[in-house]
Length: 97
Image (cartoon, rainbow, N blue to C red):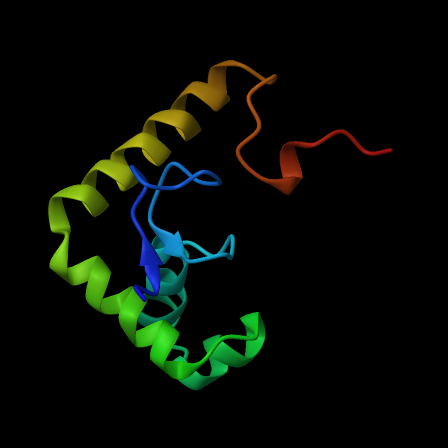
């Protein structure tokens, strides 16, 4: 069974993520490569295996065009959110209840 679901095959995300989870490949990449966390630390945070983390990283590097498109969509969304306060890009954009 494949660990990663592509955005095209997903019913819960429009980008690649860990199967049956909402943890995206780009988030895993940001934690491991961007923040320098080791794979086991990231796995522990999300109740995954180190193997899941390495599969996600392999997917990231095996599908560079798809991952660039994901990053471009996120960048465009954040730029649009700067001009439109109704666009939610993260928890910080949600109204306090």
